[in-house]
Every structure is written in structure tokens, then in C-alpha cells.
Length: 534
Image (tube, rainbow, N blue to C red; front, side):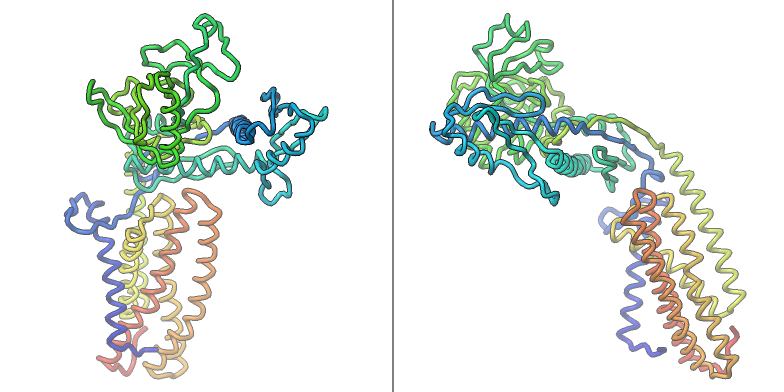
């Protein structure tokens, strides 16, 4: 138990020194000193309650998912019919009351049509139900209805995708350690520590960034458009505010366009002729091929660039665009063009998100929390160290040194793994200070008992560490289990407390059990005392 070969001593001290060094940048910054930029900078990030920042609650409309599924199914059915080369002919395709209906013109083709539509449906998770219900009424009319199980699965997938899109957009702003979690079925909580411009964050997150390229319906008469009348298969889309045609609408083909989900990159740039800010976009191979096909087949025809249901511009296709790149213009400023580029790079939100709650935490409140937390930690540390020293003498000194190293190693480990310190995390720190010496109390009391039984000094110390270790490990394992459960099932502040608690338990066991045993063994080997005061 008290034998420490040289390699083990070097290994233990190396771990300790690495943990202490990793804590120095955070302590330097907290003290107001600049850390050299050429040196590594592991640092503990401060949470929203300490650094200030923005708290935003976003809410999605699940009904959008249903309408999107109906539109996607209609486009898929039309594509299947078109690829059949006239073998199956349908008519009266329409969306009515949350269903998609169409009529097969030849009753003998009903079975063939069913075989074409069935692959467009799938199982709804583990519910045992399909995501679409297929019915045939009056012999030839198909009715496709999204099932509740399919809608629930689609909403879950849409919200999971929305969380990832929101995360990418916030990361692109350069912020660190945002908290982005789902709340309920259709809400997302976003907390961004240190954000100084919450309005820009709301603007960025509220933008769906659904980019579409649709052909303009040139057959629509301006007088009909003014009355809200469009030819079958077309729809009216308003021009975006700030555009020259703002306040008017444009008739575009509802289906057959290209969506922006095939983009691979988007960057803010400037038009070489006008020097106006634009967004340059790049398609992947699939999107580039579709864009080339669309522009090749519609030379000298206008097409609309639509963002979030608003027409940015409707340029004419002068020649096929086959390079897989294009530019989006629309009365942008440099900042708005950059925000749009970020949104497009991050991907479109599958559903619109609106801000239903917003809170801003000022940095002054966080600074006050840090100051009071540090005072509590300092007072607690000094009180515990004084008690241990006067109670256990030399062994108390070892415990006090281990306590200081333990605090530094907690900061160091948190900096290395890039975790966030919150106000409950500071409470976890204070709690760890008291718990850190608990192991030494058990060990020292056990050594006292062994000495009273008549054991020699070395035997008493060895038995003290050995027998106390069982209780120490049992107690700390149960604490870790509780902390892990808090981390898994808690959120925000609860997770912050759990992280500090787990790290503190591991470092306190290391310093109290291993490092103090190393120091005691080295002293016993050097001094060879015949008795000890403990």
C-alpha cells in the first residue's frame, strides 16, 4: 500500500501538474491579466448566469409539417405518373382537408397505381402503423391521408433537424458553449452566454432560410394577379420588403422547382458590375444537375428566387447555368447578406420557428454571482483547512495541500474538456470543498484507531488507508451515480451542478487517497518516526 516505485511517482506528479497548469489560464483571466496568445489556452467557459447573454424560447407550428408532407407526396405522385410513360394516367390531383386525392382515368390501372404509390409510404417507427393511409373510393378515386403516427414521427424528425440547424447557425456566430435543447414536442430552448446582440440572434434563428427556385407563370394576367386569381398549378408569392416590387405579388409554378437543400456552400460577396452585396451559392452534384436542367429547358424565361415565401428577385434565364453556382441578389446590406449566407450554409429549418419568450441576463448580475461565489468558496476553504490542520497536525497539512490541488485540478479538468461553469456549478465547487476532506477524515480516524489497538506506525498508516478506502469508494460511487442521473435527466443549471460534482469527486479521491498516501509514505521512509501525533 505504501510502496511507490519511481515510475508511479513521476506519473502521479505529471497528472497533478498537468491539471494545475490547465487551470492557470482561467485564473489569469479571472484576475484581469491577459494570457499570451502564443500559449495554449484551455479555459473554463462561463454559463449564461455568470457571463450574461440571451435566453430564447422558440416554438414551431406542427401543422406546417402536415402541409409539407402533402406537398411532397403530391410531387412524388406526379413524378411517378410522369415516369410511367403514359401507362397510368390520373387527373384531378388536389389537396383537400388534409388529404391528397386524385382519379385514375382507367379503372384497370387502379392496381398498378396502388403498386406505384405504396413504396412512397413507410412504417411509422415502432408503432406498427404506416405513415400514410391509402384508400380507393368509387372504384377510381385515391385518397392519401397522413396518419397520426406518421405525423408524430415527422414532427419529431423536423424538431431534431431544427435543433441541429439552430446549433450550426449559433456556432457560425462564433459564440461558445450554447445550450440548445428540445422542450416538449414543438419547442426549443436556446441559451447563448456572452452574446452582446440578442436582436441579431433572434433575426438569425427566426429566418427559416427555405430557398426555392421556381419558374414564373407568364400566362397569368396582371389583372387576374391583382384579384388573387392564378392559373391551375400556380400560386401567388409576394415580393420581399425592400425589393423594387415590394407590395406586389408574382405568379409562379407551384411544383417543379428546385429547393435549396442541395446547397453545399453560401458566401457573402459583391456583384462585380454593381458592387452590391450578394450571396454566392454552390450546389452539390445533384442540385447542380437539376439547376442546369431547369435553366437549359427554360432559356429566355424568368424564374423566381424565393426565400421564406418572399420573392427576392425574378431574373431572366439568358443562358443555361451549368457550373453549379449562382448568385442571389435582393437589396442586401453586407450584414444581411452575411446572415443569409450563414442560414443557407447551416441548412433550412424544416419548420418556421417563432420567438415566444426572451430573457436577457446582464453581465453585472453574473459578476456579482461570481464574486459572492468566490467569497463563499474562500471562506469555506479557509475554515475547512484550519479545522483539519488543528485536528490532525502533519496529516492535516497533507490534507490541506490536497484540498488546494483538488480545487485547481477541478478547474484544470473543466478547462481541458471545455465544460461550462454555471452558478450551480459554483455551488458544486463549495460542496466539493467539504466533501474533498471527507476521505482524509476517514483515513486519519482509522489510523488513530489502529494506533490505539497497538499497531506500529507504518502498519497503522497502511491499515488506515486500506480499511478506509472501502467506505470512501462506496460513498463516492453512489455520489457519481446520482450526479450522472442528474446530468442525463436534468437540464441547464442541474447539468452544470452535476458536471462539477462528478469532476470534483474524481479529483478529490485522487488527491485525498493517492497523493496524500504518496506524501505520507515518503515522509515515513525518510523520518522513520516511532510514534505519530494524529
